[in-house]
Length: 172
Length: 172
DNA sequence: CCTTGACGTTTGAAGCTTAAAGCATTGCCG
DNA sequence: CGGCAATGCTTTAAGCTTCAAACGTCAAGG
Image (cartoon, rainbow over all chains, first blue to last red; front, side, top):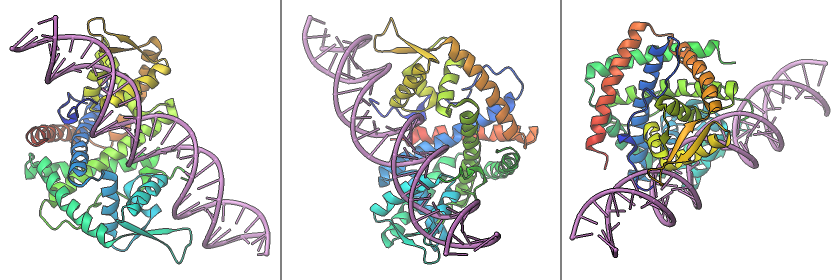
């Protein structure tokens, strides 16, 4: 890439899919708009995490899980909460451990399991990142009124429930 | 990963971020829910594209852009529409060309630019994939009523506009 | 005890993604 | 005409991500 080519200012991902002759256009347009919003936020957050803290979104997410859990989590538990594969967490944990932000201990009860914890430094570092992150999200979503945000939150809750149900039936 | 470990059935990504003492919790919860919905759909679509067609979402998206454009696009134009980097498109195009789904021609007017087009086979293949894709999306979002879908679409439109505005002001 | 299956993690191969640097071409402007 | 910035693309290094296979451990049954 010659210049960073600001992704956020690019044309649009919407209406990306054409040609499908059936009905269902409705759902497709909704999905594309959902995807566009998520991509816009996510790209910007990744960019800011990199510029402000030299870190990445997956690293930040893993630290957030540990902070939230308080008392340490196994790799598998983190994998489930982050909705990513086991192997992915293995690599992320290795990098964060090398940076001294987390430490791992073999569980005394189950020698297969590794428990991850934030180090002192990890906790301090995450606190800084987390505060900035919260502000960024507020800034990016601040264009919506409080009422719109509430409605959106509620409808997305329904969407999520519907998705879980659909995935429960089909996934094989 | 021992078994595929169905990501879709994992706990939740919501409430992933804790500790931030400020206000703005509102926006954060909205963002996490948005992200959860998108991740659930996207993971499932990736899985089905792989199982049903042995392809990936980025490949499918690139074909969709070409189908939609009709008359061929340069790599740079595709990069902007897909909201990904130039280098990314270079690699994707190389793989799709190797598979015989697209072909490239150097633009007669500008010898820097490469124009991509679907091959006959690419057009046929994409038609199959696209039809299935549209059905999957309808299935996954079918849990919402038509009214909810319409409201969601409208609110996400506002969110998108607000995001573009916020990114216009800040991005340096 | 020993097998068998389940579970937690790691490894390896492949693909996706980015930022940054570099190359070639174009177009403008003095 | 001669720079010179902008544009289009490719390359490189690093990281993220997945799937599949492999390894070690555990737990239950025979």
